[in-house]
Length: 372
Image 1 (tube, rainbow, N blue to C red):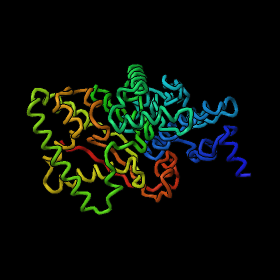
Image 2: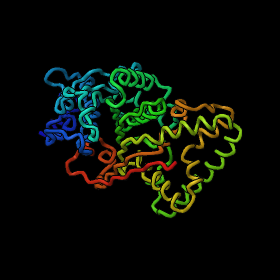
Image 3: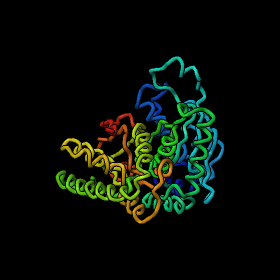
Image 4: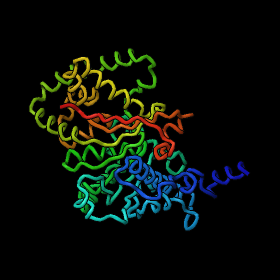
């Protein structure tokens, strides 16, 4: 019977268990406490799963009672306000969800409590099915090359976010994304923050666009040595290049300070090579301050070799919002990081979205705030 079910899933006649909320969702969360970080994480990650399921419903032509996506938002009292479609392949890459029970009184009556969002704008990651695979993989490559900002998908996403913030204010809008979707949410979050509109942001397994030293190198000493050398090189190149572009320095510092005050929620798994380097990135920064090399690290954290060298070669040199576009995604001054400390049996589990609402979840929580 199980083999028969698998065949039916492959042929698109029924949904996989991962897409069925009653089987795979956090059905135990019958009421949401918005002050509880596990509850907020569960809502944000389930709305990202809703986007995955919306696209799978579309691909498998599941309509009416066969569709599965609506259960992922209705359970938490959200409605689907807008579906975001990639004009290149017609796939659903994101959605705007509206909270049905939202009241502006929350903001006046509970000044010290976490409030529910009016809108959650969620973005899915790569779906390795023939209807979406080609476009998604091209965008994954753009993440590695730090050119996601030029894609039509991202341009559309930032327009939708700006419209939502204009309607409801930034305090009432959340961003959430997984994998490629987390890259979209992170880049948009940086741009919105630098424009003066910081948003609450949930980033699940975001790609780190650099060599995953954390996963590749076992020795802690060697990891620190490699990263220390990298910081020295970056700081040296930054000082040399910025000496030639001195007139932009004040603008850049102001832009970076704005970004440093924004603290997105970052979710990483040490067994996932796509995002694990964030653990080492922040660990190394703390270590540099501990050993008295904070000045070097402050300069290194603000820059990447790729953007410095392109600027040195006469390209760019601008600041403000454009900084968010040209710099690597992983240049993140501050973050509230959740590390999944449970053992992941394989890459699929380590990189998957389902781990973040698992009631058996065990994690480590670290606030990394950039020291100006």
